[in-house]
Image (cartoon, rainbow, N blue to C red):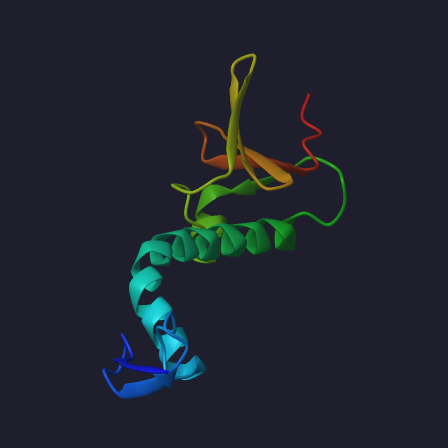
Length: 119
C-alpha cells in the first residue's frame, strides 16, 4: 500500500494507489467547489424561468386566451427578459415560458394562453 495525500484536504491517506480523496466529504467538497461556479448561472436562469411560469399560471385559469396588463405581471416579479422559446405568428411575436405562451401588445396588455392555443 502506498501513502499519498487527499487532493482536497491534503491529509495523508493509505489505500489504493489511484485513490484521490480520503472520504466522501472531501470528494463532495472538491467537486462542489470545482463545478459549482460553472452551473450557478444555469441554476439562476432556471429559477427565473420557473418563477415566470408560476406567475403566468396564476393568471390563466383554463385553456382559454386571456389578456392581462403588463404591469400586473411585473408587480408579481415577472422578468420579461427570460423565456424558453419565441415564434412569429403573423404580426404577433409569441414568447413561451415552457407550456405557457404570451404576446405583448403595444397598449400594455399581455395576451396569454396555456399549451400555445393562439390563433
